[in-house]
Amino acid sequence: MGASPLEPVMIQRSPPPPPSRRQFWRSPALQAVLVCLFPFLLALFLALLIDQPPMPSPLNAEQLLTDPFLQLPTQDSVRVVWFTEFAGQNHQVWYGNRLQYHQNATTRPLSRLREDAKSPIPNPPTTPTFRTVWRHEALIPGLTPDQRVPYQVRSQRENGELIQSDRFSLAPAPSPGRGLKILLTSDHQLMPMTAANLEKVVATVGGVDGVFLAGDLVNIPDRGSEWFDSAKGNAFFPCLQGRAKFAIAQANGGERVYTGGPIIQNAPLFPALGNHEVMGRFSMAQTLSDQFSDPYPRPQAAEFFPVPGGQRTLDPSLQAAWLKAHSFNSDTYEEIFTLPQSSPGGKRYYAVSFGDIRLISLYVTNIWRVPTIEDGRVSRYREPQATAADPSQWSYGQHIFEPITPGSAQYEWLKAELASPEFQQAKYKIVMFHHPPHTLGGNIVPAYTDPQAIVDRNAQGEITAVRYEYPLDQDYIHKYLEPLWDQAGVQLVYYGHSHLWNRFRNAAGVNFLESSNVGNTYGAHWQDTEPRYVPPGYRETYVPLGDPYGLEPIMPTLDPVVDEQTQEPLPYIASNTLTVFSILDTATGNVTSYRFDTTVSESEAIAFDQFPLLP
Ligand SMILES: [Fe+2]
Image (cartoon, rainbow, N blue to C red; front, side, top):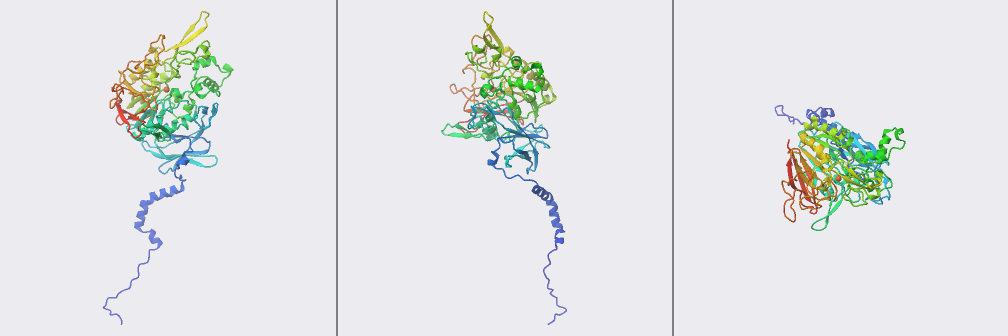
């Protein structure tokens, strides 16, 4: 039957054909999606083209001698430094959110690093033996203030094997106004509590933005293992990079292995030269400890050990090397760190702006010698009788390494720096160095001055005895530097050397903080404690107790430690179980000091003192 014309005609429709490829790509909806996704797809495409790093491998990273660490941040750059024991090739820093950029490092070996019989390494050599360690440094340019960028370092062994670090983050110098946490620390010296201290810093305040280290980083600066890999587990870099392994017996039995803190991989380190960064006269026969204890004053070195050939030896670098070999040097410290070089002292003293801070780091330290008048020992107060008759064999007491008296290069530079707009306009004005200007510790006696040799002679005119006096009224720090700080509005003078915590404030309002009870203590000399040793029969009146310059220690404001006998609060911490660290918070202007009982690892650090840096 045919269909009526009036009946609706049911038209059998077939399904619509799929769009052609051309129609598909012309779809407005798809084009909108593609436009939105274009940046992402482009980035993905580029990322696939770029050599992507393999995932970090802890085993791989440990083949580097150190993790990388940050140095010399500027407004738009920072330097990344690391060390290997192989010369290798293709040493690079990879950085960016996908580690998509890289910079090549410059590589050079450290020149004075050695090990000897006392080195805590497997099979140490019997006599000083050079150890080759390679230093790599890359400048990372084009950075934006206050923006952290992930990074990783890679070094390739001679056999092609690629070694890479874990990922950390870098940043240029922070902009003014940004709140910063600065760790104030010193006197690490591979001491027993150092790893615990730095581990607790990170556990308590998290990452810090910078580290100010007031000297004495290691004990013997030319002994490589003290910086990198002492078998005792508490070398300098491992402690500051969270790779230490140092056990401390716990109060409830057992022991806790502390690791230090991963700090300087992400925060720049600004050190000052301590007496333990200075190496004495060079030798390949004497032990490294003996060489460390044998610095010789430069004027006497020039007099008694002149350059062979005298004026005919015209090469200044050879003359300088000869003088160093016969006096002292801080070459290893200067080779390890990249520091501002805006002063006549190069890296040895400098000034730097970091956020709201202007930091002046000075070279104020002298050789430490034993406080005794016992014959036969090289001491701060006398020459051994056996060598007294020969001035070329004298030790010259606690001689100062770098002059700070008026007219000296360092003093004149400091004076100009204190008056500079960079310093005067800074919100926080800080001076850091190693030797204590005010302390209850032992190392403030005798005075910081050039030793005055008192020579006794017999009737024949022969030298029979040599002793050294250090007049208190000739203390150069007190006499020449403190008036400069008073006048310049310095808010904080930060230092170390005596291995305890105490602080002071002078009449001009300058705060003095010694936060060097980090790894151990050498005690406090105050009220009923043991007095400092002072030599009997010397014409100078040496001060056995308290601050020789008359300041009273300030009682901690929050939670002072109490004397176990009297239960009276103490204005200091000098302990071999409690370790101390201090944090400057530039958002509040407060300096807060914390103590931590290393024998109770699960305990929290206690904030025991806080004071503001007032404008
Ligand atoms: Fe020291």
